[in-house]
Image (cartoon, rainbow, N blue to C red; front, side, top):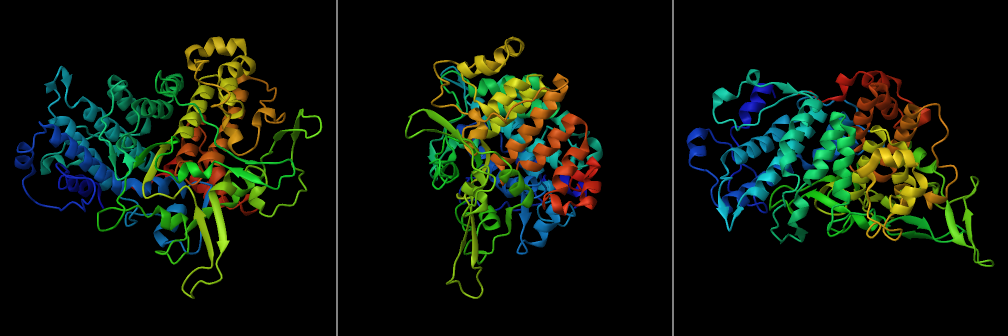
Length: 562
């Protein structure tokens, strides 16, 4: 679809007073939108609530592609022979304007509705001394900023406007500047900053979901925007303040998958359960989806990553050889009490150890998340080898969880010049004794309020290094360190590589990988960083030189806008 047609189309489909569940799709009309808008000012609480739900309905349209575009173009997931041609084109960087996952119009439909809400909501209306629409106004601001960010990281440079388009004559792309990701990030940092402490609305439980999980935290989004804009200390500060906010703290938690004994024959797993419950404290933000096609827009991610009745149990995406190699290269360290001396001892599995499942070698998170099983009683039209990916166990599309924030916080700390602090997030966990023990006095002084974690709420009992979620007791791993390097710049690059690996181990299959590689490559000013990772997605022995050459030019990272 041509760019002019994309912009024209968003004039036709503005969600105003629409319920979220059981909504169905918008009907296109050629009615005079100017008159329509004049009759629909948002001046009552019902107006704003229904409009907010209508915006969420528009976000449902882009929910699946948010994950697929970020995951399939990265290095951690590979497609099976059962994958659709549309998915294959995404993974191969050959998606054109006919690919259903490449439709900028759908992002602009969200933006148009946000712009309309922000332009017409009666923000001066007060009740009992409080502005009635302040909370919803802040939410819509974050929806708009988040959607523009998705546009920019998928399309590169995009038409930018913040007022609703109300007439056909306004659908001329030449009227609007094109903003890249840094320009968009800088614009919305300023736009969102006044709302950093605004409380979000609470509509209770809707379809078994706490409605507050519909919203992206302002502080976290400001951190994301600062990270993309290269404003690293500001990013670290926003993440830190979200994690440590008095009365609403977010320690890492201690969920993990681990060996139970020094014989390495029994696994204890509290990791996968984070993804199978809609009430998990790990899950912070989702795009709520309908539970049936009759009600409206469903997510089909389960059919991509899992064997289901709808796909005759032929899953379409699975873990890549590159992910296998990275996971199995990790050193698992077990600390246990010696049964004779009762003293703590450290044990590492031998490299020659034989496992019942090779996914048990090294880091255990892949083993926890992916399960394969054979079914001998399947019909001839059904697959006998079946996969479950526990990260896709609910009907909703998760876009933010707690460990994402900690990893981005580490990324920001490191780029701000504090590699010891960043590495401590991975290895030790940031509670006060670890901060004093593993971060130099000079770096603690320089980082100052970026390392302020209350000794009364961030404790050994609720905090761990992220690497320990799958690699045993990282705190006791004498090889998992920052080596002595020639300069701080070298240390920053070294730690960034470890953060990149940890992002892979922790967030594989969640739709973040391509964007993480993109952002790290932009930090370095080196497109080959992304290109080299993706070219090895099928394993070191199957390096794709042609793909490396293609992606070494950053212009080829993006989808065609027209």
